[in-house]
Structures are given as C-alpha cells and as structure tokens.
Length: 474
Length: 165
Image 1 (cartoon, rainbow over the protein chains, first blue to last red):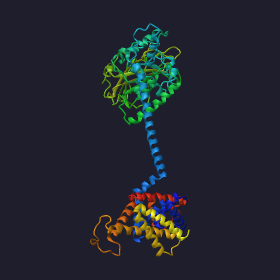
Image 2: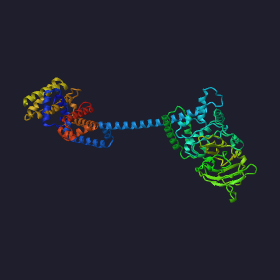
Image 3: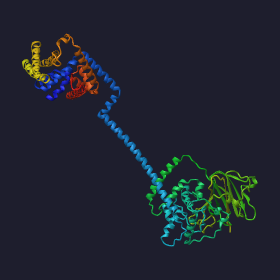
C-alpha cells in the first residue's frame, strides 16, 4: 500500500478499529511522512472525542435513528433513484411512455389525414361534376366529346368504360338510344337483374338524380341523336304522370329513396364519377378501403339516428308467358294476348288501393275486392303482392297510404300528381338490350325488358302516394 | 525499529508539527516535554503501534496545556493573574462546553451524510474493523472500503468546516 493509500487508514485510526497490521503500516508510514503524521495528529481530536463512551453512544443512536427514518421516507426512494439501476429503470420507463404517447398521436394523425384525404378526393370529384358546363351548349368540335362523355358518366348515360371500372356494378349499363324526356324525377337505367344486389343498383342510380334536369335531358338528346336505334313511338305520359310538375333536386334516385340507404350510394356515386377512364384497379382498391373506413367511422359516430323513411312503391307488370321465371314487364309494353299481372311492393307497412279506369267510366276499385267490403288492403313492407289485371283496363291508379283509406274517391287519381308534388319516379330495365324510357317504351324484338318502376314521395311527412299507370295496349 | 529510534523519529515529527501550529521556541519546548513524559512515565511502552498513538495523545494534551498557559499568562490579551479563578482538577466549563459543541456539530454533520457513510460510521463506532465492514457490505476488495471511508471522512470534515476541533 502506497503512502497515498495509507491515508485511507486514517478513518480507522480515529475510530480505533484498525487491525494490528494496519496500525503497524500506518504508524510506520507516519514516522516517515510528515504529512501523514500531521493528519494523524489532527485526527487525534476526533479520536479523543470518539473514545468517550457517552459520545460514542449518542452518535450511534443518532445514526440509527437517521437510518430508520430514511428507510421508510423519501430518502429511501431517492436512494433507489440515485442508483444506476434505478436510473436505468426510470429512464426506460420514461422512454416507453414517450414512445406510446408519440405513437398514439402519430396514429391518430394518420387516421385524420386519411379521412381528410378521402373527403378531399370526394369533394374534388363532386365539384367538377357539379360545375361542369351543361351539355346543352353546342359542341360541334372534337374537343367537346370528352366533356360530353363526362356528362354521360356523371348522369344517366352509360359508357362501356364505366362498366369496366365499376366493380360493384358489373352488369349495370345504360343506353341512351331512345329519346329520354327531360324530366328530373324520372330516370331510366338498365339493370342486369330485376332486384339484384341492392348495393350495386343503389350506387348506380342516385347520381342521375343529383344532376340538374335540363342538362340531363339535353345531354341525353344529343347523345341519342347519333344513335342508330330508333325507339318506337312512345306515348307522352306527361298528361298522366307527375313528371311535368316542378320538383326539387332530389338527393338520390327513387330507387335509392325506396330502399332508404343513401350513404353507400353517395360513396359509390363519387367512385363512379371519379376519373372513370384513367383510374387503375389499384387506386380503386385503395380508395375503396378508405371509403369503407370512413363509412364505418361515420356509422359509429352517427349512432342510432334513423330519419323518417319516405313512403315508396315498387311496381311492375308481369307477363307470364315469357318464361317460368315470371319476368316483369313494365306498363306500356304489353300485348293484347298477354294478360298481365301487377306486382307491387312497399318499403314500409302501408295500405294499398288500386283503381282501374277504362277511359269512359269512372274509376272502379280493382283491389281489394270490393265485394268483401274493403276499400284498402294492408301491404307489408318488403312483401310483393301480385294482382291480376283485367284485360279491358286502360289505366290503373295505385294509391298508398300509411293509414287505411276512408273512401274510394277521397282522392281523385287524376289529381294525384298535383297532390304529391314531391313524388319521385324512376324506372329500371333489367335487360341490357332494352331501351330506357319513362315506362312507355315498348320492348324491343327478341328482348324481354324487365322494367320496374319505383315511386317515392320525397317528403317523409306525407304518408300518401299515388301513381297512375297507363296500360298501353295496341 | 527499536524504541530509541522511534522516539528520535517522533521528536522530529512532533517538532515539525508543533512548529506549524506554534512558535519555534514553544514548539521545541513542546516536543521536549512530550518526549520527557514518554521516556519517564511510559518507559515500558516499546511497541510502535502503542508508542506512536501514545505520542499523539500526549502531544495533544501538551498543546492544550500550552494553550491554557498562554491564556493564563495573558499572552493573548494580557490580563492579570489575580483576576483568574483557581484551577479546578476536573474539566473546566470551557472545556466541557467546547466538547459539547464539538459533539453537537459532529452529530449534525453525521446526519447530513449519505446512507452508506452513515452505515460505515455506525459500524466503525460499533468497533468493527475494516475487514469486518468489508464482509458486512459484501465487498470483495477491502480497498473499496478504504476508499469509501476516506471519501466519507472528507465529506464529514467538510461539513465540520475542515477541522475536527
């Protein structure tokens, strides 16, 4: 042990706890080193103090009290914290907490950004469609053709490319070969199936209703001007059907309102109008996932809010001789040899009354059977009812109400359109080769058009509905 | 090293130490008185481990006596001997007060030490040697105990303003 290390024995000198060997080395070194000797001489005062047993006992008691109080108090915690292991634990814990907080914040930010991006994309897609110049403007140059196509996409006209792009509506295609009356409330589309997946058809239809009526009509006319197909002369239904009534711009088609689901429709509508020719399948999948997440979040936040559902009617005229499947044929396309059957369905529980008119006499009750003493029959929501139509009938009027009818003539069928100005009507045709029309176009040769008409009263507060159907018989 | 060699070396160290505290003349007188006492009264003490601490103890007493004589002879403030009271064979109140104050300061300083230093001082006051403390603290090297004790002693000395007195 060096002389410097011998200083470490000074503590034992004062407390008189040195071993004989330590004493020997310390004192020998002190005789050789004046500095160590001086230190030992100074230490003698403490040694003298500690030699007193009373002082020693007091010091011991004080140290024991301090140790006891410090063990259970904050000193113990501070002592643990000052240790390297304690510092390591504290640092690691702090880093973990910081990482969790930071990760959570980043995750929330990413979710917000994803939602915002979807909303922005949909807004961008909606705004060009809304601000697109009307197709009624003359467009003789070649550059106007894409614009026309765009309008056709966003409105009721169909393009092959759109069919290719749309995943959820692969069989839906519309043709504007026939003259389409410029009516906002009535649109015609061709569906692969009659009822089909509600999702796909709902997604297809509402965007037609969002666009203004005048451009739609003009566009359809211009689009059909170059078409070779000449539809048969169709009677003008404006005198009977309420299409001539000014109506508010609907938020969705009659079919969409009938099924009462607009959220999915809006999303798919945006998809249909988004870069239909340039969008790749990968981008579509990505956007679909985003929209699903946003839709799920919207459903979660929306809670259980269920608005009042507007009263809606779905009807079609069945022609039993076209096959065992009982395909539906819309009114206005019947032949004399086919005794038709009327199929009706309501989107909510209501009461139905069907009046028949042959042109000369006053309307008579066709359904329910008047002999049973009933003037209206209950129609369960979603349940289709098939009603045979007499051959001599020229026009039928279907009346729906949430409450039973008081009398047969309580509301004149001829004025029903005036009574329900918010009534929206839409016809879908299942056969891809058939023409879209207002339910007045005859079926083409070799095809079996399956037309289904949806009539919805847009005002949910109005619990009645009335529609007049001309049975076009040559 | 025999007893005479030890005493000869001790005289040199004591003279140097006293010279650093007192005047040269007083330092030589002090060293002479310490050696005379060791030679006459403690002639039977021959071992180094006993003679050196005895020398330190005698040296401290002689220095305190010299301090008291200086006070009596008014070497500091030149007061009359007739004004001073008679000597009491027991510790005078000043000495008792000084010791009490030193103990209080030492207690206060020890409570400010860290846990390890307090434990170390406690075991030392209980009479445990460094090897025993090494076993208690579970250290493999006794140098660790030496180092810890040196640091604790310096810390305690700092809390006592650099002096044990």
